[in-house]
Length: 184
Image 1 (cartoon, one colour):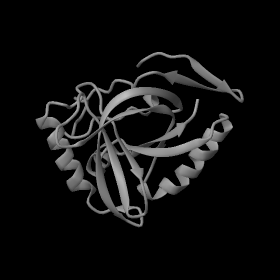
Image 2: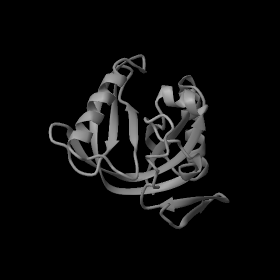
Image 3: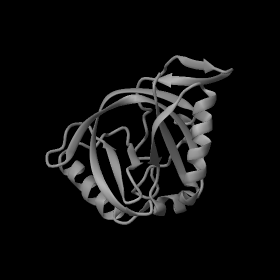
Image 4: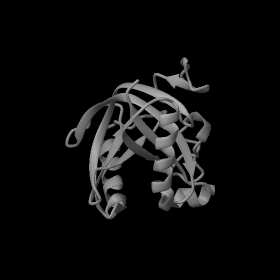
C-alpha cells in the first residue's frame, strides 16, 4: 500500500494516499473477482491524479440496474482485448446519474479504442460497508455524516462493488466501498 500522511480533523485520523492500494488479482478462488481486503480501503483519503479510466453507461429502473451484467461483460472484454487490464489492481466505480441511468468507471492501464476514455482525478474519502445492495441508501446517509465529521462537504459519491453477486456468495461477504468526492 502506498504510504501517505494523515488527516487529523476533529480528533479522527485517516491515512492520506496518493495512489490506489495494490490488489492481488490472482487471489481468487472463483476465477472471477479477487478476494477483497476491506482494510486497504476503509477510512482513507485518496488524492488521485490522472487515473486512466473508461466509462460505460447502464440503464436503471428506479436506481435498479437493468443491463449491468451485459455492459460489464462487454466492457471488460474490450479492455482485455486492448491489453489495458491493470495487472496489480482493479477498480470499477459506479455513479447513479439519475433513477434511470448509471455510469461505470473502469480502471485501465491505457486508453481503449472505441470506449469513452477519461483521466480521473480528485480527492475521495472512503468507507467500507458490508451487506446487501438494498442498504445503499442507508450507507450513503452514513457516509454523508462521516464526511461531515471530518470537516468536508461531499460533492459526489461513487460506489465500488468489490465483487459480483456470485463471488460475494462464495466469499460470504458483500463489501461495497463508498468514495465521497470532496475538496481538500
